[in-house]
Image 1 (tube, rainbow, N blue to C red):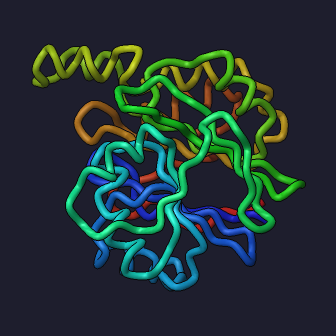
Image 2: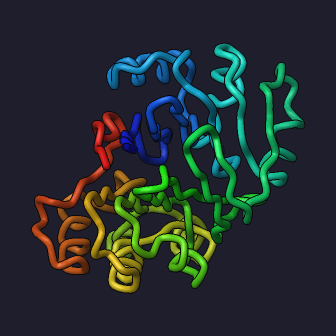
Length: 255
């Protein structure tokens, strides 16, 4: 069995936990040690229970707490060579970093992990899919456009956590500087609601038991807009579409 939950999702910090029984993996750690401990407790998890931390890329909302949290609790950190090149240059005591190939699957105990490269404005960004041999969870955030490889990896997942960062109309009309708007909406920025919906129409979603929209912009999106776009793409009720929040993430979901 796989279960998964979010400690928080958005521009002010991100972390997801994947639990396969004897192995519990954090995906990113964008919060302080104190906040991580508090939010893990909310899910009835102790820091000492964590087997490893996977890092997607070096932006602070994903990596801000990684080194200190990993050092405090003796947790190994898995990241690509490009991301490691960023973190090795700081002056802090380093955690146990394990460099991975962003194209090569690997295992941690019984959990199979497939990293896959994504277009984003970072050194060597990846996202991840997880499997216990029976069920598969796909996670995709911080991605500017959908590639054929992304479609292949996420095709037929049993659960999907997918970025729905912004509504293109709201972003265009926002008070953000033009340069920031171009970055967010560009090929190395973030997926908007319609890009996410297009992906859902492309992949085989017949096995999908859970869908959670993630990394929503607090200024340029809303849960109602996300649910409408996703429900139309999947042909489901809007109430079925989960939405991760910045403060609360989302609670445990099981496969």
